[in-house]
Image 1 (cartoon, rainbow, N blue to C red):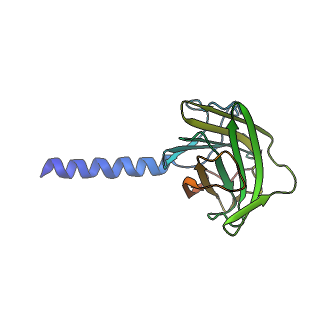
Image 2: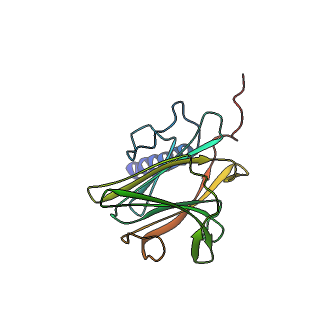
Image 3: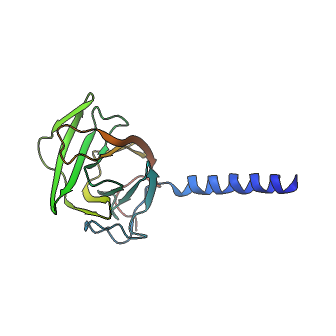
Length: 185
């Protein structure tokens, strides 16, 4: 009986520790958009449906760094500003025969269309060993609200953006470690 209580306490403690660590915060050195997610490069990491989603805020909180590393040779996508595709700013990428393509889309209902204007500051896409990695950075302000970041993700086997069937899709609500803003003295 004592072992079961100890195990329950340890499971509860590790769950609360994991929840405490699952916050988006700043990083000392900005992640490099090189298509390779390195350990410690991002302050927030989550695994959903086999995809690894990594996020960080720049030191001033003005730049959002994002990456998705998914088990596919097809497209990968992250969207911000909504927990649904409708209304989300979608950032999609694929690497077809060594040629990277990145597209900014706006979610509308269950579809999406090309977004007007470009907001990606830097990006890289790489496919290797059956996984596609998309790293990018963009201004954070349009997507962070009330101390949280809403995002959607998707990935699939098709090598085009217009019509696709996802292997997986979902959403995440990511709390901020603190409100972004200028560094305090």
